[in-house]
Structures are given as C-alpha cells and as structure tokens.
Image (cartoon, rainbow, N blue to C red; front, side, top):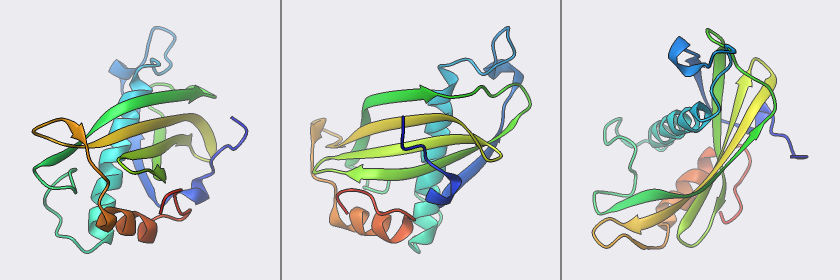
Length: 155
C-alpha cells in the first residue's frame, strides 16, 4: 500500500488496549483479531457520526432504521507492524467511498504515530426483510460528507 493513511486523515479515533486473549504464543495480536478491532472501530465511528450530526445518543449502530442493515461484502487487511499484549492502540476509521448501495470504510490501527495495520471493509446496504441491496440514503451521504476530514468518493 503506497498511500499510507495518517492520523490527521481521521476524525473518529477510538482507543483500545490489547488484551492477553487477543495475542498468540509470540505475544503479538493474532491476525484475525484485526478484523474484530476494525468492527469495534466502525461501531465507534457510527456512534461519533450520530453525535456529530445532532441525533440523540440512542439508537446504536444502525443509522438507516429498523428495515435496513449492512452486510460485509469484502475485507482486506494490510499488515505493517505488530501490536502486543497491553499496548494501547487507536482504531481510526473513515469512510473512503460511498457507492449506490455500498460503503467502504478504512480502519487504520495506530500505536502512537506508528501505523500497524490498515483494514478496508466494503459493506452492502440492504433491505432487512429481503436481503436485497438498496441505495444508500442521501441523508447518510450528507452526514458523512459533513463529518469527514477527507471527503469520501461518492459524496
């Protein structure tokens, strides 16, 4: 990855301590846990997006309402350096693209200023009952565009 993200590109940054159960026998974070870390980061992103947009603090992760949801379509992990047990890491998340019915997030995991891992996840926005893709609402595009430091593609 040549376009390495920097902390300055992110408005949503959530701290997390690495716990013993998240590391392997070499005392480094087990690779699959970086996807879990990205999931925690995206949850915090949606929480911050809701607050920044002036919505009440309730309602949790889903900003699209009870009839809509998101499902992971693709995930990619770029490993650069290892976190170890008891490290304090930061889960920095931003939207990099919003398509017709999809969203792509980037979670950069930092230890201080050091970039450890970049997790890119694409989601499909869908109608819950039928599990069919539906367009990403304009209000969401507007919320993201107003929130982000770097405007995502498609906003």
